[in-house]
Length: 303
Image (cartoon, rainbow, N blue to C red; front, side):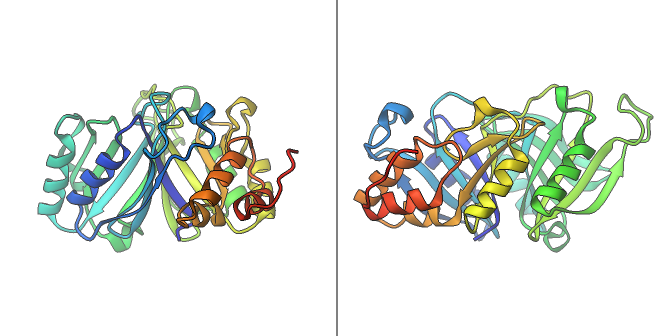
């Protein structure tokens, strides 16, 4: 399982969106589908039995789509950068995604790529599509964060934080030269790897798009100590803390969750999932031992 998984929030079209994406990228597949239990209905407000999450793979990259209601919308501050090695495959993906969506940058030749485009699909999710080498890119899909608005000028600070908290390695960085509106020395484009997975960071004072919970990064933790450490290092907005979700000081949303949570949620044990959901819906930072007891049917004492 990947260390970090892009997590995408939809109103009610998570399964339709995931199947649309899978059909457009060769070598992709739908994985586990988790349905809402009765437990926690007063919080999640979804019909029991309806789709909650869909795990899917695009090429060599795993993602998760969630039906969470109309609370959050995508912006181009968070996007998926897709690298494909065949020009026809790029064109096919572009044509499939742009239907019902909108163009942000036309599919064309640029200084950084001979066949590149940026769009928002019919659900608002932002995609950057590029012809290139997947070996050089690291994976088919790279989550990309654009620091604009109140976060503009703070990309280097974010890189430093992610290096400290998540062990991110800075692989390359291009800086603004001062010829445009962005001040010289700012991060134009940086490529990081976290546990071998790529993440790109850009910043621009011309962008006013905020980060939202619709585009978050799920970190699969091995134990409670890792959960505690990352929560302490990253969480900066107390009111955003819920069910393992947090916001860092730049507004980027993260989910800090034990790897075992996903395994329990996809176990097929309906009673266990009911108990598990009832437990984690009450939490801010997730408590692995409590979740495991709830799943097993042991008595859980509210902390």
